[in-house]
Length: 330
Image (cartoon, rainbow, N blue to C red; front, top):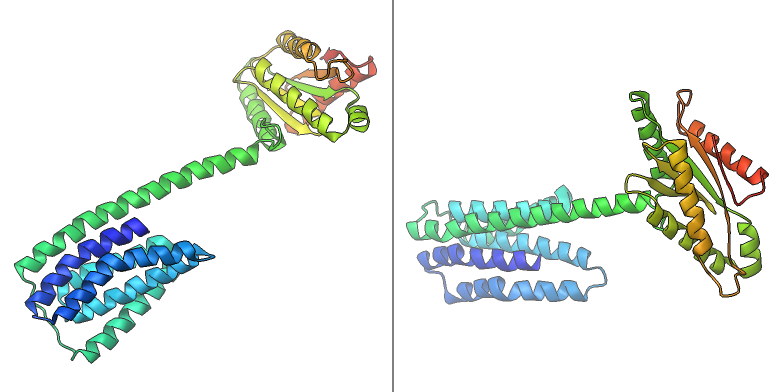
């Protein structure tokens, strides 16, 4: 807002000064115009930066800008070209900065100040626009509108980037920076739809850290968190870009493996378990941990996400029943 206010007051200075000179107004008006054009932007910036809520005070500054615009329009005796251009730019600025509510406040301030000033100064009207005033107004029309368009585009770009960032945050586990259950279920659902129309295999891997509760109880939650982070790092390293490693909850992880047979998924599971055996969280091996993994291939009878997750969970249960620290695939 500071840069746009500096540009706007600078460009407005010349057409208003042109009209004031043509009407042979006292020098005090030109001095007041210079203050408005070259000092007010810095004062408004200083006020906003010092305010507890800068946005609220900046909205007040924008309303004050509109009121100043009304004063100069009346002082120019409603000279049509600069008056219409200045009023349009002021209202468009208020709309882009704070929606219709702020534009409404700005319009009220502009009209009220315009009417009061116009009445006090004699209600004169100057309809003729000289060539000098026309030429002085053209930079305001061209440059300011281009600057406003550039600013709007920049804001829109930042909003798109922020929207993507927020979407990424909503889809990721905030602690482990891998997919959360929401994203996982979306990916699984999409894969099921794809499998219905194609003849290829995809698998789902359900991973559980053996005796994780015992680790938490014995060493504390901080150590348990370290173990979860190590597990998520392993999944990111071992899996492909097309795979989706995710935290389902607690110490349970799920990996979606598109275009992967059971044998291929078993090999992936084996690499995950091998990586775990190489991991050392403490020098005395007291924190070494193992995994149980269940793998399920998608079949035609699966109609939704829950069916495939249940099949992988059942496979995990079989791995647990057989003594943990193993892989069961079906």
